[in-house]
Length: 229
Image (cartoon, rainbow, N blue to C red):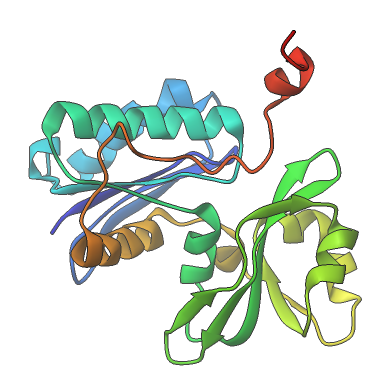
């Protein structure tokens, strides 16, 4: 089953096409411009590179947050439109799930951390058993780095974009480790495709109407609007 994966949850997005047993292509979108300008052209170019058209794609995967509000809306709107028009299965996965899914056979606590700006981070706690089994221990949260450290009950491996900003603080706590490899700190669309395929095989897809977004905290526009009169 060929899956198209889309992630626009941060300034650098990623798209990929994978089959059941291999990655056909994966691009990281570091070029100038917004996701709104470059996402669809990048998808078209990616498919051409592997001699495919969108008709060949059999499933669509998209990250549903937490992450950049604007970025998430662009990626999710694109994925929903493609799924609605084509009737192809749609699967959404948390950005934090995807980060953890890219860690090969770790054992113990993992804490994916995304920079949420304003001195905060998005995070959740996971446990891996060393043989590929993963359990999420908490729902996605947003807090200060200090509050996060207070909530981690045992030595953990921290990974994600939050490591770039707060890695020294996390690593200064005895027992904690910080991922320094770029491939562990980046959300990868190929990992998203793998997790989406597993979920689709177990549970099926999601209607574009029913796909839920994980925002965790109110957007700036909602904060500035204030309470309803």
